[in-house]
Length: 307
Length: 318
Image 1 (spheres, helix red, strand yellow):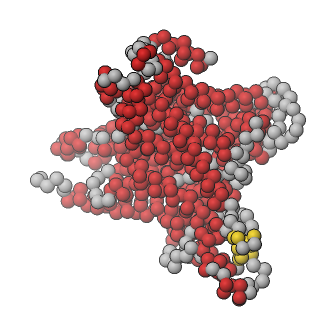
Image 2 (cartoon, rainbow over the protein chains, first blue to last red):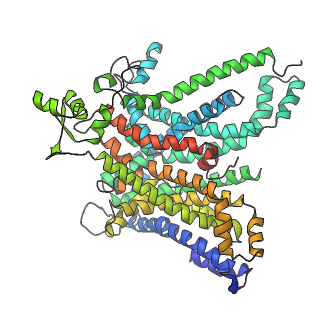
Image 3 (cartoon, helix red, strand yellow):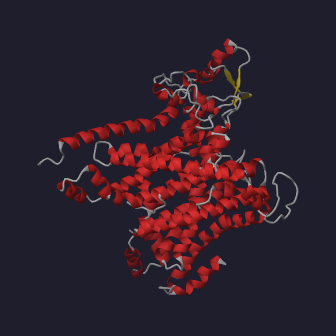
């Protein structure tokens, strides 16, 4: 149906070459685009329709029993389940702490780097390294750093009198420990975008401000910040989306209930408890939330692009 | 004042540079720690206080690639003397390498590493090839509702992997594709394809249309113009897109965890699964992680000029 749209609207494109000189532009366009769109429909939309069907059943993939249609029961149970809302609350807290931290640290780093000095390129690239690494492996080696008896985090913090924290086993700390790792990993992302924004601020604005004897704070809030805001917004949106989806880090680092983000809960439900039907319904609730966030995301991204 | 920088500004600059150095140390310490742990002996790895300076050794890498068991009794001195140096290192640690006849038994690590290579390279090749064509299509031709289609292509990346993994698991199980290389290759191609289309579209938009138009006037067909004029111009973009796609597939964890367990398992789910296993040894886990992260670190330096574009799906170009 969707592919048909492209073909049906094909009449809009005038072939600029005659058939004698090879394929028409129209044919080439369709040949180049339709396979990709078809592929993505088959492997992204079809699975979602498949799981929509299962979300109305009591199917358990671990048992050899056929699925029974149970209507909206899965959805009713999930929406009435207080634990699910706890998962959403934990996720919201995680998103706020980790993305907030990334924005502050990342923008701070960019402010520091936004001057010329030797080895600036090398230093910038080195600082960007964490965000390119595998989240699973990063989570794993931060476990080693957080080890309560010989990890270096506690060793470094010892002079501050904080040397005895069991970061990943303490229910009050574990979520923050995961968020700190996330900040370490993704503050460089915010830094990268902020640097692009800062370097685009026209130098003459600063010169004008200096002539007017404007203070540092005035220059920062009236010139720097407004001009960097669109890029900071993009960084914020990208990171919020990603933090909401977080699975790898939290799953590897901590098994506590206090770090049970939505993705982790969904994984437990689907692949540990084998409540296949119910997990499909849960996935749909998550999907609706993601679509809502995505719409906001696209709206702002387009606004920022128009600038 | 004649000078561009006042003394106050210069002090500010100095303080900022020191702060940058501190940041570099803080940000690189975890990476240094994983790298250094992979060259430590087991005893040195978990000392209190942590050991910063030590004599590097390759024992963790020998252990990483071999299957070992704990020694139950001291090794026969004659056997010890007759063994190669690398086997002695393992004996020294109180373990022995398993052999089948004369052949050393390899651990699962090399196999998982090769799985990662096969799956990442295949999916990258497919996604970048398809993505390049599609990006050209969107860049050069009028496509009805082009923005909606591009958004649809991007939207496939917005969902948490688990949401897609549940139905994929059921579908793959029905057709016998769970735990196969092909299964992961297809999935990784799907999510890299959306990335490749977006990134390549940016690169395609930057190639002047006049190049092809001139070629068309010279009697090239559109296809010939694409292959002989556009593709060579897009080489840098294709290379950057390919390296990015490779890194994304190489690092992917959630799908691999849920859809593979043995034959086609990649390194990201495998490496953490070794924690808590019988011979759980942090130096071996560190060396496995180090080897796995090394290609990405190298690629990051090669890509440094394109990082901004890559991490924002081409939304921001510099």
